[in-house]
Length: 345
Image 1: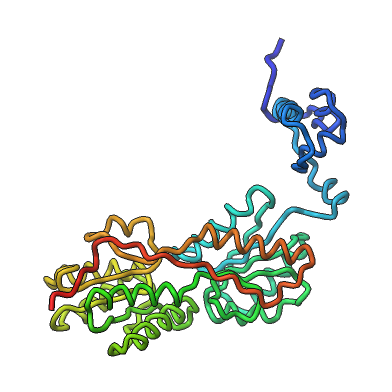
Image 2: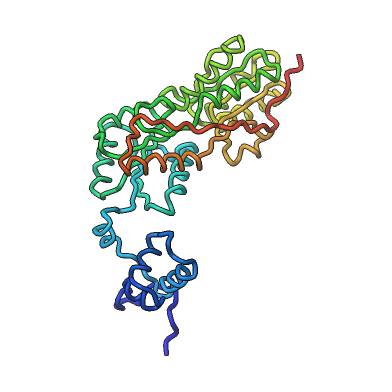
């Protein structure tokens, strides 16, 4: 006799198990199986365990098409993303997937450029797939502008688009995080703080520059010229060689950790000690930042909370609540390590 295939997919050609088979094996009604599948709270724990055991033994899979016809729901969300090679957008995508995984399938459209035509095409494709709502990772100005063409009745939430977007959105409070990083360096006794900025086409970069500038002006500190980077370690490295010739002790706030890494390398090559001669604070708290030499003081973004808030906002929109223009900023946290110290003068 062939061994039982508990927990495995049915043999090719064998009849696919249906809900009635699960009910029969578990000794419960068809309705009870349905309640377990739909995570209904009014099921006794022992009964739930029996049904789940039967599902595993039979390798039962709910018929998604039939379920959609009955409930009018697909339990699928669409996510439109752009440059997922960068730490911020990639982490936003991961945070959204983790937040949705217990309740929704996530379908992803990764576009090469955040242009109007590409965004509308992705939205149309998702609507053809009957997704219940759409989340757009929109960190660039052009991405946000492209969303203006999406019909208002489509449940849609923008993520990473700054805290002043004219639509339902969730974003890290970049300005507050940058201001706190800058104030931290000023509190260490530095008379001013240089800023290595991200590209001006990115909303995150603009808001971090705004926060840096606000902190300097509130303290009455001199405002150095912005040093324009492009998020890459290479741009930080080039700027580091420019700053290496600045006399005395200086402080630098970098708009992301990768540019801070390049800065550290350039300063080391030029014999400038960090934090003795130059104090540095980054932004992002990438996993490697604790292992830089020295370990990097930086601003941490809570991408898990970003994903959870985006999902909650989208679920409210799907339920028909009026969330137009709702904005849910996520606080950023300063992580103090060893790359900044008190000014000695």
